[in-house]
Length: 88
Image 1 (tube, helix red, strand yellow):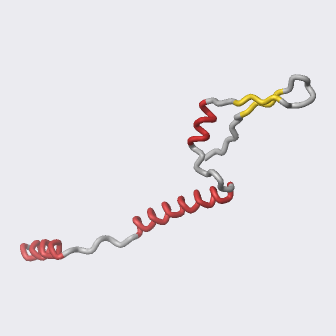
Image 2 (tube, rainbow, N blue to C red):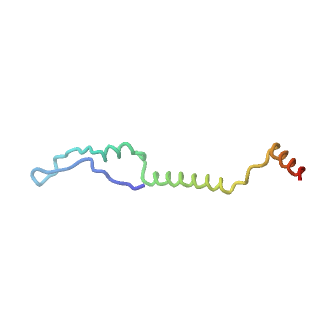
Image 3 (cartoon, rainbow, N blue to C red):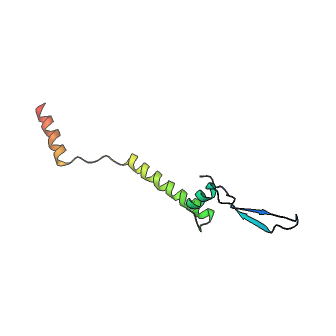
């Protein structure tokens, strides 16, 4: 995820000395940035730690699914295989 800074205000000067006038910019980009502000009030470090933790949880779940032992046979499966063995 790329972090982008979005301009929401333009500062200008009429006399060339001081920047006293500001004009608000409300573009589609700024509205979308406000809607997607998932890390409101959190430092960048905290946001990155949360993302890393989510990725680690996904990795652990995938790894567990891959390397977990297969399901055990239930009584119905055992009976079926015993019947097949007897037929031979």
